[in-house]
Amino acid sequence: MPIHHKSKIHHYNLQLTWTGNTGAGTSAYDAYQRDFVIETGGKEILSGSADRAFLGNPSLYNPEEWLLASLSSCHMLWFLHGCTDQGVIVTDYRDLPKGEMIEHRDGSGEFTQVTLYPKVITDTEVEHTILADLHHHAHQKCFIARSVNFEVVVQPQF
Picture 1 (cartoon, rainbow, N blue to C red):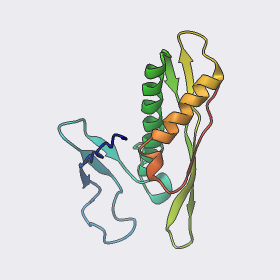
Picture 2: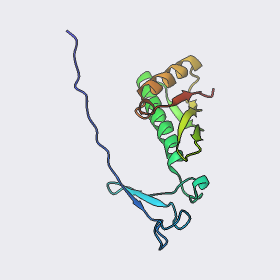
Picture 3: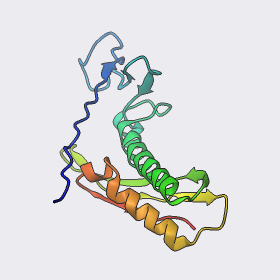
């Protein structure tokens, strides 16, 4: 008889506060800044803004970059987990994710694809096929990649 595991439900929350009121509120499109802060559970406060293309502060991270970071970091965490299970010792991991977003004439838009380019260094020589399988497994498990409605491609760099 098969064993059935109950699904676990995880809840996440945070507080986002717009900090861009320069005194006139949203009285005009260029009358306010797009800056905001994110806080949750006593962790470091994160500062963000819109992309420069949308009048944001270019010195702050924007939601589009955080989407890339979420996909990249989720993949990395699953990959490292898989390496641990397989006895592969990773000593360095870097990724240079790239995303493509289309903006429509009406101002709406969506991401159409994100590509991850993870580069891994291990303490011993590991066959590329093993690392590729670990990346494939990580991609199948990644909560964030499974949640988006666009293609996420993983192109490991060997």
